[in-house]
Amino acid sequence: MTGRLIAKFTYKNTEQPVKSWVEMYVNVLQILYSEDKSIITKLAYSEEDGLAAHFSANAKIFRKSEEIGDGLYVLTNTDTHSKLVNLSRLFKRYGENPEDLVFYLRNQNNADDDPLQKLRRKYWTYALPVIQKANVDTFKNVHPSNSNWIAGTFGISGFYLDCVANYDQARVDLVLSKSEKKENKAAFDQLFQKKAEIEAKIGQPLIWDRGDNYKLSTIGIKLKNVSVQNETDWPQMAHFHAKWSKQFYDVLVPYLR
Picture: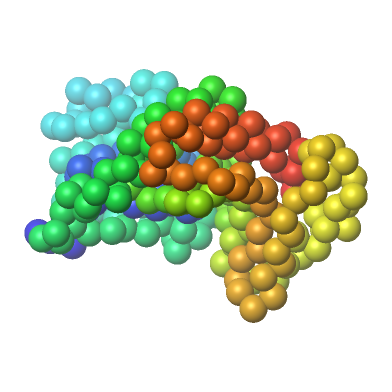
C-alpha cells in the first residue's frame, strides 16, 4: 500500500469515504469499539507489548493519536502496513471476517469529479440525517456516499440494512450476506417460514428473493416513480428510507437475533 491513497472503504457493506489511511483506521476501530467495548478497553489498560502497545487511556504517551471513544486512544504515528496488521489481529479477537473490510484506492480520475457520484453524495447528505433520526443506532457510523446505496449494521456480522436510491425507484432491503452461502439461505428460510406473520406486522407484502444462484439473499420493499435525479423527489425518498429501515429493524431483526 506504500504510496497509494485510499478513497473509501466498506465494512460489513457499509461504505465510508475517507481522506487517509489514518481516518480509515480510526473509523474501523470506532465501529468495532461500538459493538464491543471490552476488547479495546482491555488492550488500552494492558502493559503487554504487541497489539496492546498501540492503545492507551493516556494520549500523552503517544507522539500522535486519535480518540476511539470514552477516553481511549490509538497510536496513529505508524505506517499503513502496521495499521492493517493491527486490524487483522483485532478482527480475530472480535471474531469478525477480514473479508468484510474492503479498500478502494484513488486513481488519476478522481471520483469526486463524476457528476453522477456528486449527485448521489448530495442526496445522501440530505437523506442521512432523516434516516439517522429514525434509526440512529443502525446508521450512526454511516457517512454520505458516492454510491447508489448506503448500509447500516445491527450487530450481526454479514447481515445489514440497505437503502438504495436509483433513477427509477428507491428501495430498502434486509441483506443476508455472510461469507457462507448456506448461512444466508438458512436465515432466509427461517424468516420465510414467518412470512405471513412478518408481513402482517409490516403492513404490506414484501419482495422475497432467496437468490438460490447467489451467495446473498434479500427481503425488500420499493418505492416506484421517484428518481435521485429529481430533487423534488428527495423528501419522499428520504422519508421512505427512514420509515422502512426502521420498520425492518423493528420487525425483521428480532427474528434473526
